[in-house]
Length: 352
Image (cartoon, rainbow, N blue to C red; front, side):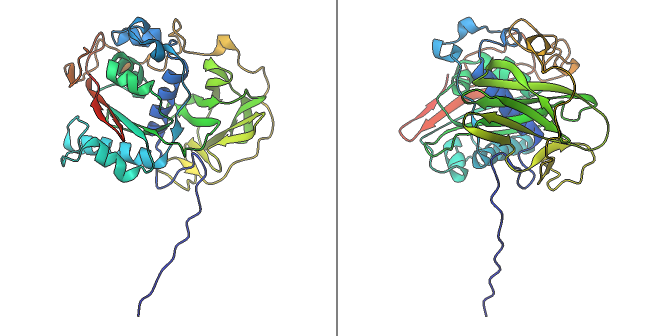
């Protein structure tokens, strides 16, 4: 006799975690990719560390682009490749078993009309990999600033993968990604969110049930990265981002909350619980203004890369080496980059 066991899995909302993913590192890599896209001229100091400037960019690469949507399948493809590189200690677009990039991504990601990939190894963190690494390399920057609409990321043990996708069936989302830094806050935390829409009348971080107004850090009110810094103590902290604009109310994650600390997690790997606390009101004080925001082309005071781990004088990382790419490592040592790849249904091209 044949017995069938049927398990019903609730459909996850946009940005909700599943099976331990996306991790905080993956969300961080996605967020900084969006930051480069929405305001590519804002990170001049970081480009200088990587040995380039916006004068090296094509006109289209200096033109702001939309944030990229999170796609769980594309994220799985990127994560698989990062894990493969970490496990076997190599840097390439082909998998360790010889599977080419296009075949690998196609196994996970359906319905695409174009895909691209960037990989790197050795950078101190996600921010440095994006801004001082990939954005200072012609082929990689072309992928980041390309006409894609979805992104998957893999980030672990200083190995990084971006898998870009283009699908006509991708549903627009006002808040493409949100994350917090540092990953394990102590005393304070900053939450970032990438947004595109007609402009928000309310843009709040809801942390432990309290609303904190978020303001534009990079980009513009209708397409940018919003942020807010908050003081936090020990214990469990959970959050989501809530936006109200002329198109309605939007939340990231859609139905749950991310966070950190000693919480009773529904998904410990992702730091996620399957609920959201209702906001109880604004905290005292004025919303953040431009003078309170970090970043920008000339302001490195609150630069996420301005840490001892990113100090170019003593990284402890490997000698500069680029794989299949015509650019040099520039001012910051200890990087490895593989040439960006672009695939469409019509062609396979290696970016040089």
